[in-house]
Length: 151
Image 1 (cartoon, rainbow, N blue to C red):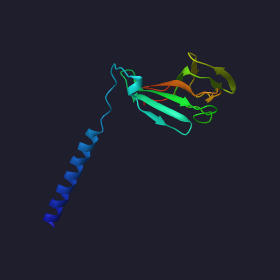
Image 2: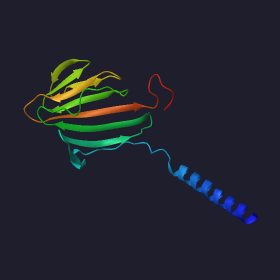
Image 3: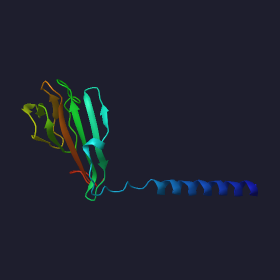
Image 4: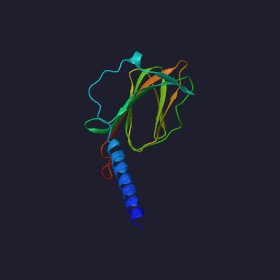
């Protein structure tokens, strides 16, 4: 019996140590510092509706996460149906013509236009032109979303 108890204590001690080591390895990702992202070095991934370039998605000194990607939509396509989410987004049109729908109101915009999609408001985008449309998506996620406890 004594040997069994000692063996059980050793096993439990090993499990506790392994649990602590694994917990330490799951540290927060490091914050993103100043960087340059060269357009030509970012991988283009084809999608069902066009293509996507993912530039970054990481925490910063002041944000829980900052995400930026570039979407290219083929004519007549949309990346997904209109939706809403708690995070705000900025859309900057690089080329082409898109239809931005905000809370049921649609408007066509072209290169250089900026669309602000507010928190929890319905929004959608569709390429209404005859050529591909490309736009930047910038999504800052604060460390604490309004109306919530600290994340």
